[in-house]
Length: 133
Image (tube, rainbow, N blue to C red):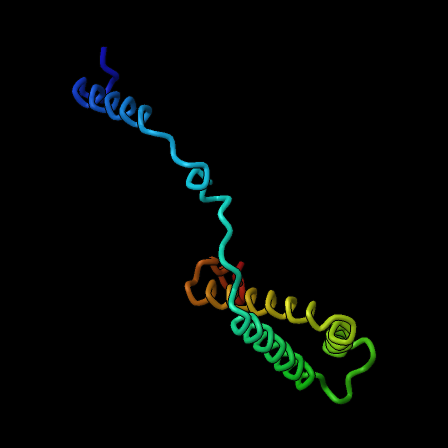
């Protein structure tokens, strides 16, 4: 009895292959480790140091850019001034967190630019300037 869509010769060949694989000798325990459990080699120290330095430099550059956009006459509740103060406080408390945060911001900005460039988000139709009744 053959299954629909599978010729009987193909089914027989598949069964033979499964039987042959079932009779194959067992692999040694060291070779039987699933790929999902293998450990990747640790990154090189120089690469890790370079990535850390680059990340800090990028965060400092972005912080300087934010500072440059704050108006000199900004009041204490100006949104640019508040963001600036928050970023400076994060940098004072945890520069590593600021690095990670700025990386997320850069990624989101890149995604936004990519979506805009690809025009993946449909634009709302422009409102009519005037309606004639």
